[in-house]
Image 1 (cartoon, one colour):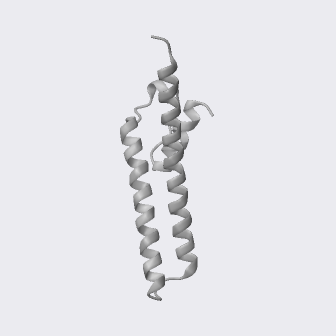
Image 2 (spheres, helix red, strand yellow; image 1 turned 90 degrees about the vertical axis):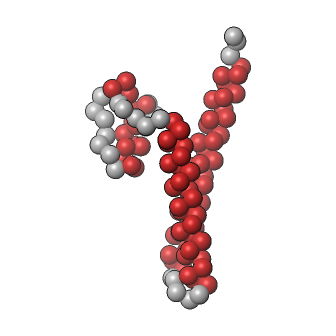
Image 3 (tube, one colour; image 1 turned 45 degrees about the horizontal axis):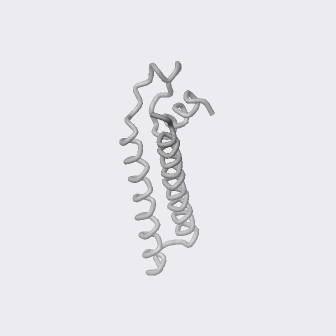
Length: 99
């Protein structure tokens, strides 16, 4: 996957206009903003799953909604873990570079 494809996918997920040229001309959010966004989405998905579980326990929610919310929370957590793993791998690669 090249950088432009990744930026277009991210823009589509965020609901913003996709860039039409290379990454040098794109005003993308900073890395810390992206990480904060991923963490926020994961936290929101987890809260939603917890709410659905509580509502189901009280007999107010359908089991399908609970399972969907849990699957969404799991996918968000897997995304955060994958990003973390890539950041750690990049850091380790930088540390192996000669000075």
